[in-house]
Image (cartoon, rainbow, N blue to C red; front, side, top):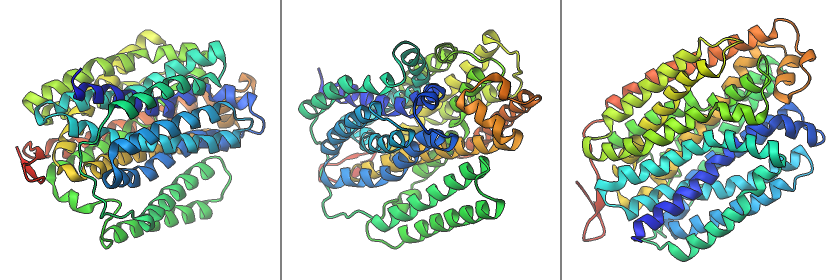
Length: 484
């Protein structure tokens, strides 16, 4: 087998596992809440948010570390840490322990996410990167959606702990395959340093914003404290930007934003993530909560059309973008997903599976059409020696957008529902505790969330359409780069 296919198969398994675990827990949340002592709604939310936040924060540093010490070396380390974290999650005895062990998992996921795209870009020639990155990028998005189906099946048949234990044998085999089969093609940049101050300001800013949203949504802080946390978070994020403009080796290399293709692709990818990040979360509680009350298994199966359409169109879109350019496919993907979200604003309390198939296919197809061409154009537009950082920046914005999307969805729902009813829906408790009229308010809240998603995707059309002429950078004979 050619080395490039060895790279693609291993990195696709890695990113699929890391992405799958970001959503596989959602289906099992009601079961986890019942079986783990002292699991409140706040703890339940941070089982999801903690993993996503930690992955978002560490990605940029791990991309930098990959450029410094070898992308393959740190990728292998990530697989090992992720496997250990998965085993610990399955052994958790309280909700708090599960939150902490999910953070261990997220460290491994950070190494996998940050270095996979750069390793693929190093191994494939420019005219094949779209297809390769397309397959890998689809594994990220498909993993997030397929996790709902797999999580439902495993939770129903083997219990919630199995959703973590299933990673252990796969992770052990994949770690060995990565260690024995991958090799370094990039030249380590050991003169670089890690921007710890920038990392702390970014982490503190994003965490403060998410804490503000979740605590306020659950009625645990007053409005003044909510505003204070938001201001603190915004201030730390502005401080982060100020720091990045002044340190020698920044965590977020702002100079890359001067590359029009890179900055436009980055803006589109963030807005897309902000739009779609809450989709699975909202639909799971729409299907498992009022008014449907489906089982985890049935709810997961309902979402198969999303992952099926995404997995079908993703590789096709990546291959075609190698020939015809990324712009038409990225734009078409955003328009298709937006149409699906607009359709979802019409669902009601009695909408069944036949009526959901159409919008689900549009949402999934749009994700598949957009993801791979956009990622390929972003990664190919930067010099080879900074692809680790570039890949980290792109995946950080995907995770940050998805995490913020989840927090905003919770806030929208909290404004439409009493805290008691919201807790009942999230914890999967008895139907009788939900007050009269709450179902109608919950449906209204889902409409609002999906309406915002459609609007964000329409806004993302601007950078997607104005990204400029296609260009690729590839290694030159002197170790530098050239534009093709």
